[in-house]
Image 1 (cartoon, rainbow, N blue to C red):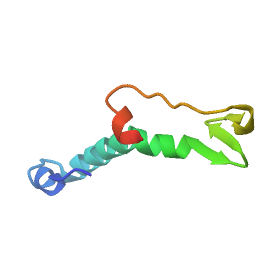
Image 2 (image 1 turned 45 degrees about the horizontal axis):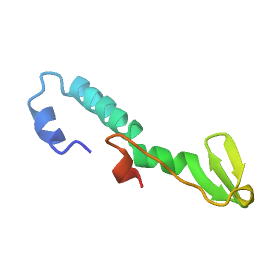
Image 3 (image 1 turned 135 degrees about the vertical axis):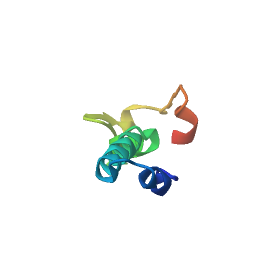
Length: 77
């Protein structure tokens, strides 16, 4: 996740604190991953489209259009 982690830790005054800080940064980056978030929250099961806590009966629709915008839209789908 953090490519130069070893270099950052080797120059740290307090390596234990620096490791904790880098772990926090890595967790924040993982938490902001839009592709992972979409895969965890969007699924199709039993003829229904589930998005978060909402479920939609796909048989009631002729088509489904997904629209995304912003920097993360292209890599997500």
